[in-house]
Length: 266
Image 1 (cartoon, rainbow, N blue to C red):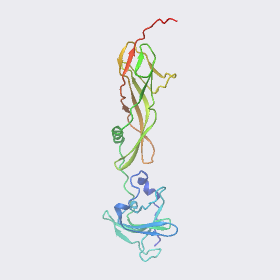
Image 2: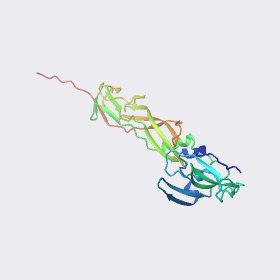
Image 3: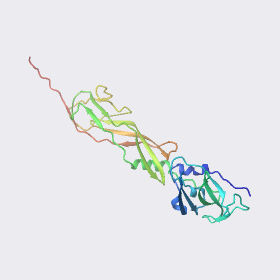
Image 4: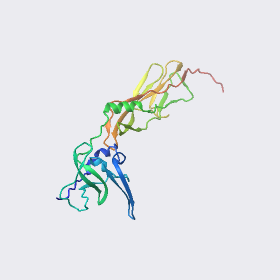
């Protein structure tokens, strides 16, 4: 019988999502380590029924290709009949040796089945996870400083919170990276008026966001920030979050004063 060699380079697409870098802990029944002048290897015997049980890429990085050959216990390179073995799912599989290049890295009972595709979180589940995370509120800066301004004066407002934020979390055993970009700011001036826009404002003399108070008194302005998000599984393609995230700002105390003219003699 011709030696059966099955190239399984694409079998590990699930592992590329960060679901399982190795399957060693759950499936290996015995392992032996060996070290020679060129490399250290670890050979394991597996009881699993699919190719994922043979992954032994302990070094990380780019995952290599693996090949299967029938496990001819006589040591011959061909088998008159491919040895069989009981698989975990109750069926009969083929007793295979797994090679990385020319190096034997394990044995498995191969039934020809690829690993089940990972259960990926839905967009709504990712959105719920995004809402449960801590995203920074916008820092409000007011000019003039020191908590005082004047009636009919162009009081300047801006925020320094403009950077993209990111969290990576496990969700349904999948590593999910959620990225949030400031998309809009809601400026609440504390006198019943507000302004919404994408401009974060700027320090004097730019005057990107200003407001004139019409009467004296105390007000509590704040700026709310709205993030537009995207996410990805492992190192996969980015996908948009189905909704935005709005984080309320912290109100600041601001006194609005009237200026009283005084004659000053020379």
